[in-house]
Structures are given as structure tokens and as C-alpha cells.
Length: 134
Image (cartoon, rainbow, N blue to C red; front, side, top):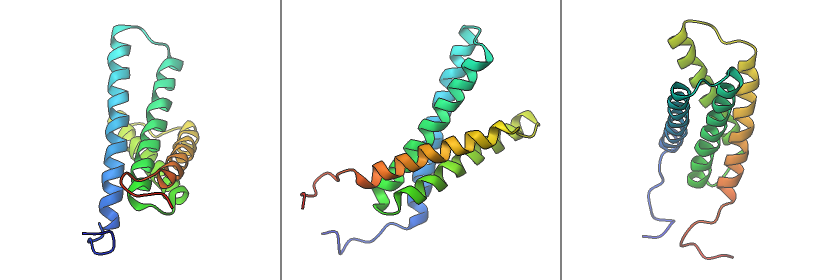
């Protein structure tokens, strides 16, 4: 079965898979950071750094996965996936803590969107295994 005759995967499945992968990576990094914070008394800036690293890497991974599967519109899809991932994280945080997010949430959303855009462009431009050049 070649590329023309195989059935295309629906777009929503690609984005759900990519978003779930990015969210799982983000939650894993945050869990490791929480475990590290329970062992050592980390200052607030240390926890903020772990949060930004988790959010950026989760958005990058989600957009990379979507870009590799979709193979087009990497920047647009990456920006959207990064922003959606950040909004999901902010809503989870708001529900768990009962407080509304501050102005820093806008900066975090912008950072996630930029990391997602970079991941989307990287995913679209990566070589596919088994496909010859040219």
C-alpha cells in the first residue's frame, strides 16, 4: 500500500495524539519537579524555572508530533497547540488552587506558543524515515 492509496488519518486524531503527548511530557516534568522540591527546599524562582521548562518542552513536543504527522502548516499549528496546551495547564491550575491566573499567565502562554511554533516548523521539516530524498 503506497502513500496515495492509504486512508488518511483524521486531523482531530493527529492533534489529540500530539496534545496528549505534550501534556504527558509536561505533567511528567512537573511531577519530577515536585518530587525534587519535596526533597530539597527550592526557592520560588526555581519552581518557576521548572514550570517554564515543562511548559516549553511540552508545547515543543506536541507541535513536533503534529508537524511530523501533518506535514504542513507547522508554524500555525504549533502556535495554536502551544497556546492550547498553556490554556489547559492554566485551567487545571485554576481549578486545583481556586485562584485566577495572574498577568504572568500571558507571558507563559506566549512562551508556549513560541516553543510550539518552533516545534511545528521542526516537525514539518524533518525527514521521514523510508522516504528517499528528491
